[in-house]
Length: 201
Image 1 (tube, rainbow, N blue to C red):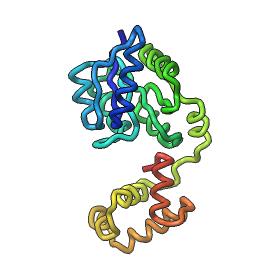
Image 2 (tube, rainbow, N blue to C red; image 1 turned 180 degrees about the vertical axis):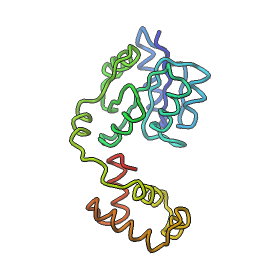
Image 3 (cartoon, helix red, strand yellow; image 1 turned 135 degrees about the horizontal axis):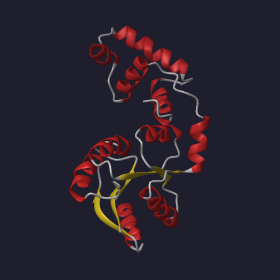
């Protein structure tokens, strides 16, 4: 039996997935969680063979949890599910060394097949996402620019970012202006969106 941990923040979706997978003759759902920060404790307790994780989760996101999970429970294969076909997310998933990355539009049969494949040590990547990630340009941001934009994405103002990074507020504003130009963004918010969708921050 393939022991499965499910992480999905929407109760109805999580319940439906658990029911569908429970119908498979070779699968059993041993744990269900609704937030990213409960994934690792649940995996340590229940020792699943495969963790099926939503990318977008409260607490910590699924990809961040996946990276920690690979360290704490290395025998557990990780299959990510995403509702958004963002190629940058696939790149982050590959960096986190997950075993599979599938769109939520997959059929129940495709999901079950993906679980069996990652359990057998294979890699599963949604072909549309793989092509999009291949065509995605490299990250144009320097590490410092990415750090500034990451803090801006979290709601920090120029003064706060400057204090944290030992820069003047004016220098921070210059960074944000340069970042927007590099990303061909309309403003700071647009720059954050572009960078997040591309997996650069």
